[in-house]
Image (cartoon, rainbow, N blue to C red):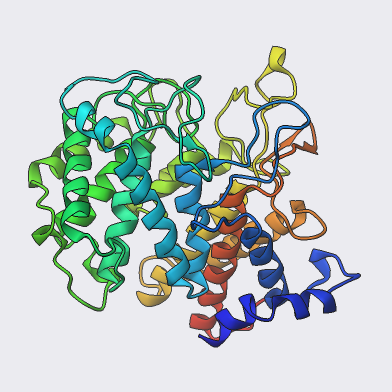
Length: 418
């Protein structure tokens, strides 16, 4: 693919030519190249991505380690530049980690109740980037969305004709079966977990929706068929009973539009629209209204009201929450996807102009809070970015947002805004 070669093979030459200019002064394609270069700097030889380069030298947790969710989202950028081999390598790494700790999955499947934050049957969210050993038991590792995301994207790639599983197909499919058994026996649709932000325990709509999307992908009931040009019957590899989907959908509808009993809205709910597209149009619209009305700030999107993580004033948490540029990227992606859908439907129900305007505006807001050399910080607290620069999955989401918006303008036959 010529464009991919220009991103990877010729990036050194082009970066030398960019010397002396800030990220905001670059042309759109140059911005894409620079942003992807920074993401590549976080990629390890085994296909994983460290969460950020921060080694803990200034205090606090080091982030130059693997978070499973971060890897799966960080490698999404590769799909959007056509580097599927690199994405598949990342998902095979996640499969290796699950196989390494398969005894935990099979053990958890026998419990049939909530497992607690760091029980012996819980797959840890964070591991060493070389040894893949668990790093800490200090916080909530029972995170169901990790499994949902893996099932969803692995199935998606397989339906697109890519060999995610590798050579030992039988062994891998037995692991997939164990994951489904684990999810259903720990009552993923009703029991609490620690969610995307590793806080809780609560029953989170983003976690329930993630698992529902993963099971729906493998059930292969036609829900996602419109996305694919070929027919790959995943259910022949891994049968998922229809009742799992019905139970999950009913549970999700009961929680929505809230994220949980204590959170009426949360940035993590954007995942229900993209990548999962597992909610109705009305539910998606409500999620977007809630987030844009209550969570969007000057330098990013807060995760939820009263968030204490890097809060600028813990004694007065409301109004001082950390602002995540990641949220601008996520909103831009969501609106680009809505715009594409509107264009393909001829604008009959939803004219695309508003979606395009919002996708463009949020991407511009994101670029406005990136560093001068094109890196996406994890967050701003009190107007100052923290040490986790760039944050791998936020950097990836910039690439996805850029390419998604480019696709919209190509469909509209309009020049990409510079």
